[in-house]
Image (tube, one colour):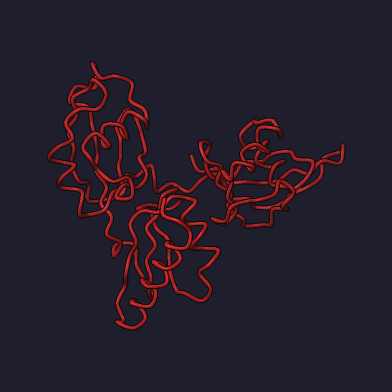
Amino acid sequence: MESNDLLKKRFKELSLRAYEKGYHTFTEFLNMDEISVLVTTSNDNEYRLYGGYDGAERCVAGFGADICNNEYPIACIKIEPRQQKFADKLGHRDFLGSLMNLGINRNTLGDIVINDNIGYLFCLNTMSEYIVNNLNKVKHTSVICSITKEVPEFLLKEPEPTEIIISSTRVDVVAASVYHLSRNTVTQLINREQIFINSKIAYKESLMLKEGDTVSVRGHGKFIYNGVLRQTKKGKAVAEINIYT
């Protein structure tokens, strides 16, 4: 990851170029730490984050006014076992490891989403043909790669609301309830700067969530906090969340 100062300078240059030239400029894929730097220091810069689908963890930042999804330099590649019946059970690390073995920079790659043992990779357009032509094996499984024209349908589904019972709207309490973690585990995640609220690093476990806040927990997922619905007879709160799966 680039140093924060270099990142800030780069974001400022892209924003200025978009403003002066009147066209859109884009970063490569940013991880959550880099997005936090952008969100924290953006000031009045006009930008929009998109990772190929709504709810993506890794995103490209686009600078300029009125950017549409189809303008982002992002391709989606379907990575499918040649013979599903004989394929290994493939996980995120398997797909990512095979891509890294091709000598690809991580910042050219976005999320890898797996569904029915098929990987869907979001990457920069400039890398798509290279990956399709060179990635032929994941783990011990032979694969076929193809560029998809549309985002897979399962990624377009809106996350469904779920109710949880919480004693407080503190981020550590809510995250622990959502992902069935101990409060101590959540505190450790916060201390390691691995929890984000609205793309900003959550520095304290005592931060109170507000209706509409988006919370990302590295290694676990992302959810939207919709607020408290009612109180239980024992005085606890019933809150509603939308979980991205």
